[in-house]
Image (cartoon, rainbow over all chains, first blue to last red; front, top):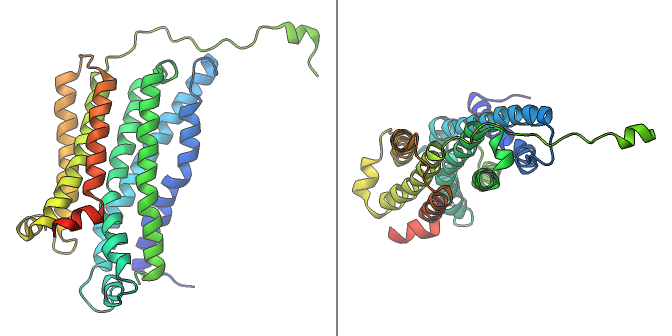
Amino acid sequence: MHLSYREWWALIHGIIFGAFFLLAFSGGLAGLWSLRTEWVTTEGLRERVRRLKIGTVTMALAAWGTVITGTWIVYHWYRYTSPDSPKSKLTADPTTAAWHTFGMEWTEHVAWIAPILATVAAGLVVYYGAYLARNRTVRNIAIGFFVAAFATAAVAGIFGALITKAAPVH
Amino acid sequence: MATPAEIEQQPPRPAPISEAEPPSGPAAALILAGGLAVFCMGLVTTLGEASTGIADALQWNDRVGPLSGKTLITVIVFAVAWALLTALWRRANPPLRSITIVSAALILLGLLGTFPTFFQAFE
């Protein structure tokens, strides 16, 4: 059992940062959705808001970590011009070319939208804090950005995983 | 099992929030900056596909290719728009709902610009 240097970075990009963001989403969404003054006590609200602030900021940082490592470290190994690079292998075969021309082209661009939207959601949580429980409009806006961040990250994550399966970075 | 005395006890009171709500300006600044950044990503992606000159200009790093310029420009737009709008609206109360609608429209346009079937039509 051995992982190469490049495989370690692919692991950090996809499993440490990327999967953390996607797995933490359901907890964050449940926390935001149920943050209402009529459902929590004063002590409960204080604790929930603190947890939400930490959670959403950590998720935003994980999203930034995913795209920075993906674009600036792993991606150039993928797109090497040598015939044994993942991109060259995929595009050489018409039956697999769409993994690059559609899948990777979408992934590499849409992925960068996730940290931006996650930052907006985290910023709203940090700025409004306990007021999110009282102000339904702001809470819904934060939820909207949070869900949109997840959706874009999910598209990038699913295609990233499938492309890695079709042509891994070694 | 709860005793009658426990049942008669008052349930926990909902959380009161006594202080005045903060101005919506900084939140609106962040929401609009997010929309502008996503729109920017879609725009530079489509422009980079439409023109080889623009694609070359976006190649800020040879190993990463044009994606380097697209991503850095997007991050710069996000940071600058966030800072400027926050400075502009720090104590203001712009309508959050309207700004969110504008931001959502920008995000949808940005998503369209990053969709391969769309931007590859400009090749």
